[in-house]
Image (cartoon, rainbow, N blue to C red; front, side, top):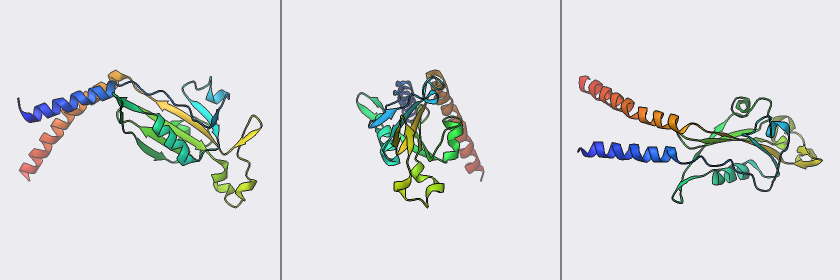
Length: 184
């Protein structure tokens, strides 16, 4: 057996193992109060809303450390994508306020959108003393921000199908590239 074929087979097998790992549960945000509003509960049961005094860096850092996929205790690294706040209507839900929107991603597998609304960081409030900005109200208490979490998952069969189709596609791309370099 060719060593190249063995390496490709090993990569394929490792990818299948990675793609069949269970989806991590949507974590709760510590030092936060869980929202019981309709948009965060029965209208969107897959989403969670929290009111907190944590900053963006603290919230996203905690979510990245809690939304973890691992094999035998070894954590697989995720990465973060940063989006424009206007895209929260598309990726999280319609009619959600947003100052920041980040996605914690496991490629070809799962992701978690973290949407935050901080009134203190609104452009309209930049000329106001931060002490005079109340924040987000929930049950007669003011918080620095409201955070909405939305997990995005896919079928294991769809993941494996896409992973499997990557290999013949890569084969034909490499074959075509070799041919075009040879002809040049």
